[in-house]
Length: 316
Ligand code: CP
Image (cartoon, rainbow, N blue to C red):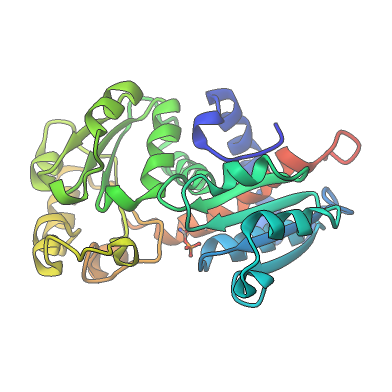
């Protein structure tokens, strides 16, 4: 495999293999081993046309811990700010014989397009509202480290589905691993055509969060999504207050969930809008694995870089 653009391209065997490699990175992640020589001589460019804290820093650290040369570029500070096209920018970088381009872009499909323009491996670090495949892999890794095999486990994903690339990649990855997924959103934030899509990919949908949380199918994990107000040109409906009442993971909802399943996991990809989609109580409860997700991101991104870039001669 040369690129990682969509979670739809990963078979169950591919995902299992990446997660197994991520687990084997444990010693490096715990800093018991400082660096692996695996990617010595490889060059990785993190080209971020949209802001990021977790994804960009973890790809940079992952590359460095595997001895690759890593460079970060952002739209501001690159020739993009002078009007250079995406194609010219990535082909310019490609001409420097780089091995991988990790791309974040605000346009859905941008990474697929870049993959057709360059020789380097392209890794999608989030493209518009389309996909964020390494986020789904790190979420699967986090879930498996707490719940074991995901076959039959129930994951509820809640929030701004219309604008969420995290949701799109997660339904693909989690259902491929055998999890049962229910997605919940207010009708105004439910993507058009989701019913046929849910039927094709095998997940359930709902708009009544309390009914889903109180249903017979008790959640093993609840993943809250960020309300992406920067992508809402027409305003945000329902109002923030109504949203929190109907769809926020508030303290009463966490207590009700814990009463049903003590070990229920609370997840959020970050960054969080505290007080909107998730309360401080929920984010900091003993059930929260939000910072575990961040740590998992390092191991999983090392694993993805390994799978795409480590040739036979350098494989550990
Ligand atoms: N989850 C995620 O993609 O976070 P960043 O935007 O900080 O990278």
